[in-house]
Length: 94
Image (cartoon, rainbow, N blue to C red; front, side, top):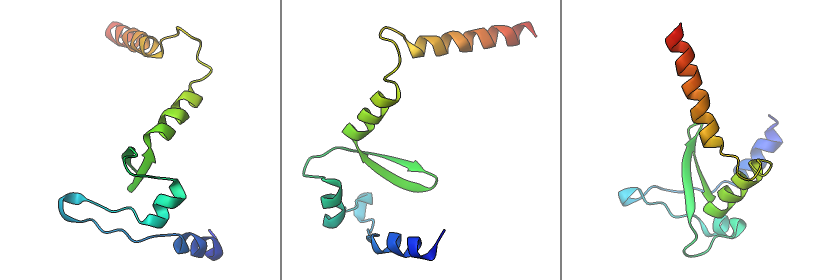
C-alpha cells in the first residue's frame, strides 16, 4: 500500500465518538457524501472488525443484482434444504 494512498484515505476520515447508550453522530460531510437525509434507514454489520453501515435500499439492490439470473419460480432455499438433507442421509449411511 502506498503512503500517498494512505494519506488520501486518512484525509477523508472523520472522527466519530460513541456517546451515551452507544449512540453515534454521522458527521455532516459524510452524510452529504452519501446522500443521507433525516429518516433514512441504514443497516449495520461488523466486517473484519470494522463497522459497516449501508442504506437498506443499496443492500436490497445489490442482492437483487447478485441473484438476478436466478430463474423465476426457482427456490434456492428449497434447493439448499434438499442438499442438506441428502448430505445428512449420506452421513447416516456411512
